[in-house]
Image (cartoon, rainbow, N blue to C red; front, side, top):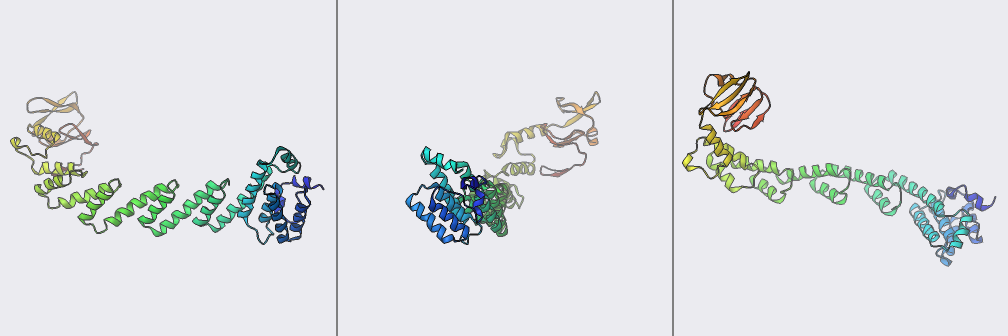
Length: 367
């Protein structure tokens, strides 16, 4: 059977002994025969000489690729098979038109060269999957740039690396992972674990200075609010008005300043109107104004509403029911309990419908 016909079976036959593929030059045929006989060293020597004479010898590069890829070769090396295959393709692409035509007569073209490369890629990927380490996948990704398995290798690399940092379970390990693989499918989880471990590590002594340092060093951390909450609680633990005022003055950027202000407002529930404290906001001053007047319920068209002691309608009739106490005495509560939920005197809807509430004082309501 002519050698050109044998090649039509496909380049995969190069991975098995006993098959000759190329027939244009006697030296290359001799190399094929040596491979058939298992004389791998002599075959390699012949091919190396051919390439020394002509570095763009497409056939020699392709046979050498098959030489390294042959499963019976004791010096089998998939990486080298890949490199020689790439050289064969470049040599073919740079060949003159007449030479390409001669090569195509032996069924050698870019498609057949790439077909062998795809087989080499797959074999290399199976090898790294068997090793299954971050380093082996990274090596495949770097060397086999054209492999269709490369995306899968990237995902497997990221997964193996993530399992490794899970074992270490330190914020520095997750930080390193995110630096190396920012596009990993595990990046979101790694980021969440990093932030939690970082916060726990930096504030493990639960001291005020640690929380202050954390807020200063990591202002974008999702745990900043927790740190600020701890700063607020420690700074105001004595519960005196002076503590809340000092907290607001010392930490004006703290997200709990408004809470401190609201609690302080209820501690000093009736501030002197002529000596309005500097910490008072317009909304709190509005609460003071609203609280001056008692309210009374009104009933119209089957609905309850509220008017103040001047007869001004504050809430138009809209509630099916209101707290029973409101029907007997002037309404002084800061928070109104209605069938539609809880409302502040300023008209803000605070919570959905509930009849179970208790005023705990200092602006807190148990629902």
